Image (cartoon, rainbow, N blue to C red):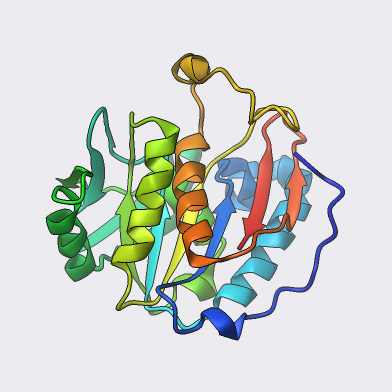
Length: 249
């Protein structure tokens, strides 16, 4: 990933305040980002945590009622994309030794139902999931964005085996379905590919590689490009060989 890009100040872009998708970001989710989990290694990802603080301050100024989260560790499907259809979703990081890191969030049920109804006629298959348990791919970034999540409702998307171009097309479709709402889209994922190799990747090897962010990134690319949002790298570091990028748009 390009580590030497400039880091411009984050400012709310009023051009997009009335649009459906008002802001988006690609965010990492290693549990070691949290001091509650990292312990003695807490200083290894200070740049990433600082970037989360800046992103949180920015997104808190954006007028949006719903936060959409795409996580590679949520419910998964082969030919359908799971979407949580429950009144509330909650989770904690007890299995990582951090029981105090816990979230209980209200789901935007109305928007969720609307997307499920309209997806099939439009060529996409969204599957309602009754799984109320939030995964660490969702909990970690939202825990680091307290101002952003305050007072919001949430829409939680899992992943599917759709080809990447179809996932990107789904992102464009998702943007179109948000015409009467203002929403923030967060794509959760960790990176591992070297700089410049994403374009020439062997897609047949994705499953074997156990990717952890490519599918959520594809959805983000489709939605943010349809919204006319421009992305920049706020931070990138990989002290453990695991790429942590914070990329707002």
